[in-house]
Length: 448
Image 1 (tube, rainbow, N blue to C red):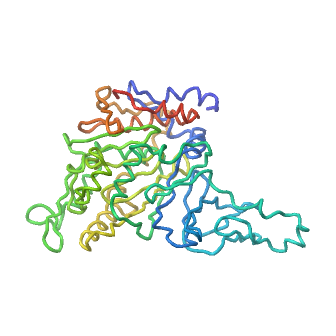
Image 2: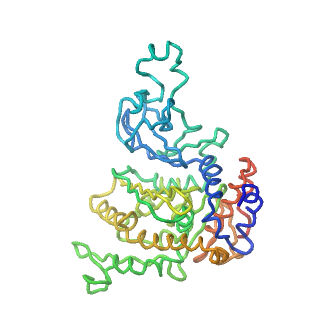
Image 3: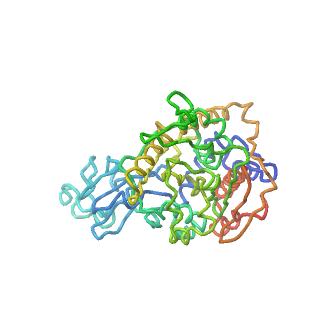
């Protein structure tokens, strides 16, 4: 598929009218390279939380597409984000994924950079360069723009991108506020693992609560204690004998809410009250300041927001996951786990138990999800299977979009509106539209 034909076919890959997705978007190498350039190379990408770099010299490395970015706390308390590549011969100047340092030194030729990325040391500079090397012109390259929202640090490689708060919009800001409304910090140890799947499968599953009653039948039975060790009441108990039954999210008729937004941000899933769990304390939602911050829609949201392209916010953990594209059929998954510093020891222990056993490489849910994503990716490479469109037509053309509180939402039961909106927005990004045109093309309609 040539680059020209790829551009020409973009509108044919996703049909809002039929609710169909061309499976080639999960397999094509040229489309994947275009994603890295036009999506990850332009969007605001989540880097880290400020609690991960509290002291001067603290750093954390995160990929943006194929670029590796070091987010570094400066001596004046500010933050800079630098590409982890030496200005001399391109070697990485830092081999650690996180830590604390006074400077960065390339292990190839010893070029050394300060915390701001300025070149401060070149071995034998006078004898080798005869005084002709201007160190001020050869510092580490910075990201185009860097900003944070309520402690969540983002960067973009596009100098023309809109400000972060504008990019996030009401839906994106509310998504972050669902964690930031609590007094949180990131716990040490980011879980990282690779699944043989296209990154978009791992993203659109964020909005899919139709699968839970089938895919997670085993996980739910283990967590709710219906296997060996169950209590007489049919559910597991904690050490104090408290019932730990967890409702099966995604069950038929469960009240759901889908929020769709400009640039492709979306939220979908059961309301907070519908997925109440003894493992997760939701009392923070009742605080007046939280209700004012989140608004009447935000306090009800209990699903999994996704900040386009690949930052999944799990509100119940709370956790943040990145789905990092490696190739068309390989994705690295990261999980950042947050702890509420105001939680009681019992609440904290239950929350950690749930996050460790829910998602991540040892998570019951993600092991089951990962099998689906890998199999779905495997099948798109078959020439016959590739011709079968993916179907996202649940409740199609019956999703009345309610526009109020600066949000566009759809009320109902299980649906596929948010997934379909993700792929519609994906097409607009892949066209390489200017920012004004991109926002207009991804503004939600009145019916979806």
